[in-house]
Image 1 (cartoon, rainbow, N blue to C red):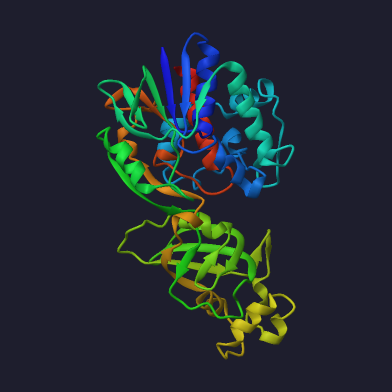
Image 2 (tube, rainbow, N blue to C red):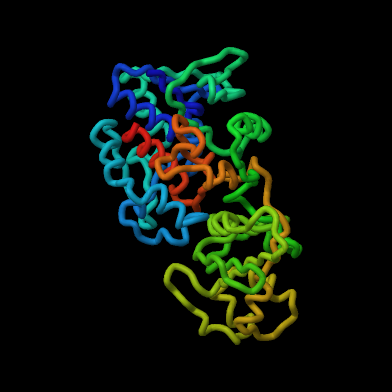
Length: 379
């Protein structure tokens, strides 16, 4: 039996390992287009690798985490996240810790510790890895993939090619997926800084404010998160902004607004200080924010005044190279509950190429791990 994975990300690695473990007689191979596998692992969590989130285990606080919670439940509700973590500890001897926000990191606190142990296990179990091997076409009728004008046969195929953020070639993705007669939703940058229509004054550039971010579609609240806002020359950044960007479509006739309330953060609410003069607010608000408020020439500020001054119309988003992930990918209507393609029972999917995405915090890599874990245990 020839088992082939396209893409050297975490979904393909876990899938390939589990299949080879269950079926030592199978020939299991991974084909990666770049010069090394698991490259995204190295940049995750600013080099510390936020690889998972403990909310997957507790099944709490997940409703506002994904682009479609309904589809998440359809595809992953039966996958036991605790079993996946036990696999990492028991078979990979990989230790981790959970921070106060349920984000999970390697105990060694460095991304390479996870990457090294995954590669070591692949090597020891006999999974063949081929780098610099970009797949240009899939022929599902002949059950072949094409690499550098050469063909490779498969009996079962796993597609775990990830998304198109960073330096990925967008057209290569469309060309590869077009051979499967799929509905592919447009790729666009997500978990990314946002460009706003209001000019950011120089006194706010580079300033970080803690507070409560609200994302509104026209006047309707669609997402809210406490976090840190970073003002850039042409827009807004910070994890809470990244998360909000997930819920803003690429093309929409609606208007999307980011509002920021600097009087609430980390469980503390000092809105009772509103209606104070700027002099009275100086000890409670960031000095650069005081400078910004002073530009309006008001003497006292109501909550509406503050929110109006810190409300920004979203104009655009930053490019792929600045994004954490890409929205878009294989439309969920093409995918069976077992992560096979509806028109191709021998082709499985995993990771970011599925158009199901999540906010920051280890959820996207977690989904990739769980997809490979699910298929690898059922094949």
